[in-house]
Amino acid sequence: MKEFFRLSRKGFTAPDDQDSSQIPDDLWVKCSECRELIYKKQLNDNLKVCPKCGHHMRMSAHEWLGLLDVGSFREMDSNLLPTDPLGFVAADESYAAKLAKAQQRTGMADAVISGIGTINGIKLCIAVGDFSFMGASMGSVYGEKMARAAERAAELGVPLLTINTSGGARQQEGVIGLMQMAKVTMALTRLAEAGQPHIALLVDPCYGGVTASYPSVADIIIAEPGANIGFAGKRLIEQIMRQKLPAGFQTAEFMLEHGMIDMVVPRSEMRDTLARLLRLYQQRQASATKTDLATRRATLPQAIM
Image (cartoon, rainbow, N blue to C red; front, side):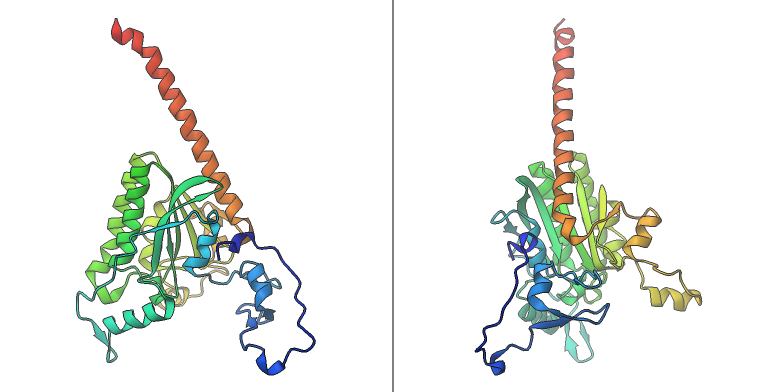
């Protein structure tokens, strides 16, 4: 997956003597949008974007790390493990059991991977959510990793990139899950005080307490085409309001039109766009440093006198 965002498309020719009984069952993927069948390798070569309708399919946190320069990622806080503070049980299954199943299925300790890496040689901190782990719900470990990523970026003097997908706060942790919204947002104020940017990428779906907290106060908010973004879901809002919502409501394009995000960027252009933004911030910081140094030099003789 390290080369995921730098893949080149290649043709595929099956051997003439290949036994059809040995062909794997998962060679084809059905697009959830246009319902067309897509050859899996072609889909992966196209960054999991449907080549027929342009639908952006979900990617794992590990796949998103392909945005970084090859071999540059160093994971941090991998020792943080979720607990069951409430002894929560629902439908005859405990929260602890659900965690164990999610961990076994995904190979992740929790819904976020965080660390340090580079994009085009520019160092940054990164934290990525993974919807396949309990809907990337925001629990104590999720919030702690995000907060630490922000604090680490402030300490190192580098930008922070968060890639966000979620269904909301993790209800099995009660108020402990809810308080993560405020904790992460406060950690980001320290990043702002350090003069470093927070770039938030919203991918489908991004709902609940995650959307309502730290991504919404980022310096730059980017979304993928067609991503669903909001607090409550469209169906729930329509039931409460008892009226139909506008077409395209809560999509990335709708959010851009109404000034809620800054840009919608296709996945194929994401790495280049991020590199350009990081370079602009780097140039601004260098310019500010030179201006500050020149000001200090100009005032030094007056201070001595």
